[in-house]
Length: 125
Image (cartoon, rainbow, N blue to C red; front, side, top):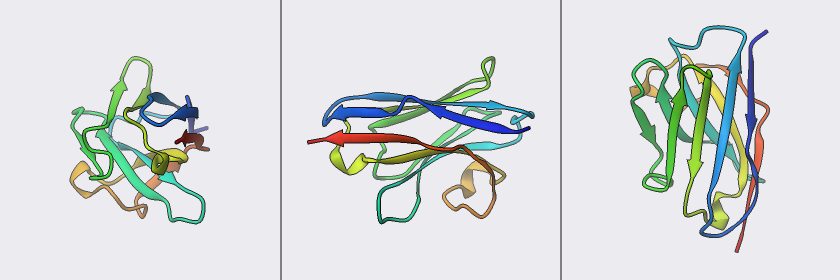
């Protein structure tokens, strides 16, 4: 059974930091791109960041570039998203996803193979 399990969300003040984790199990993900998306209340789910599991290359949405860092630990089969300099507009449910799209094609949801259940991040002003 394939599972992506996120953790690490919570309530933080503006300017603070959090580290989200996505533990992957049930299959080999080496051929996938691993993504983070987020969805704020009343808004569509939006792409945040991606990392190639095999190469480690990364890609970020403009809204988080320079503040968020995506990384992976192959031994632990876990992907991380470090959220720095958080703003109230970063408040959302954050989702991990295994994406069949190569890194140069990420951003959409049409090739997402698996989703995690999400973890809430709330940034207070």
